[in-house]
Image 1 (tube, helix red, strand yellow):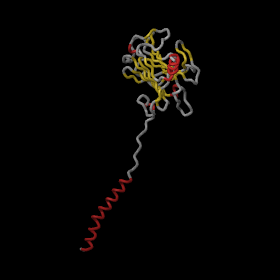
Image 2 (image 1 turned 90 degrees about the vertical axis):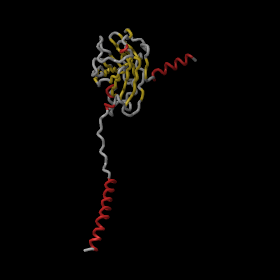
Image 3 (image 1 turned 180 degrees about the horizontal axis):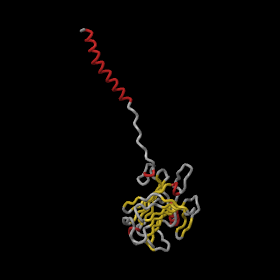
Image 4 (image 1 turned 45 degrees about the horizontal axis):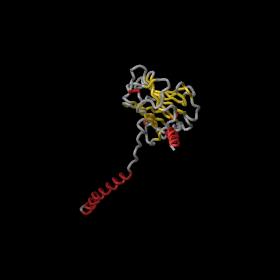
Length: 238
């Protein structure tokens, strides 16, 4: 029974939508040393599929607030390793099982995300992440992460992910290979991706025909009350 329970737990790992790392690395970080700086120590990563599944969002939380820019040695680097199951996986050094990388280097608050298609050997720059204290939130549309479908977008729910954070020669890893899924969120615009949606001007309200008809009836009644008695009196007293 214990063996069956252990196998069931292992099978459940790929469906996790958030990973916690409260006391160091979840797995060994290759040949690199573990991070020492608390501002580079990952304690949680949450991934979600937003905007009806057309955008991927990752929130990486550290033990202490992130310093922007990172002025101590090499800049902090966040790599979200992504596997599109429709494309062959790639191995690059200690990183394996992925074919997409969402990368951000902590060089400035305006530093953009770099979305790399490893298998195709191409890359695209996107918007800067949202930085709030201990958290860095990276947002990537599906059409940039996985490719553009016939309708001009792409659903990201099939993607699997893991995270590697590097601080010079040290690193912190959440997930050995990309196995985590993106959680589905509500279809209403979220604060992290609402800037991707086209703005709409408020619709002009139609004229209130009921109010106009009411004013017309009121004017007629006032004329009837004032003009008609005046005409009657004038006929009686020429």
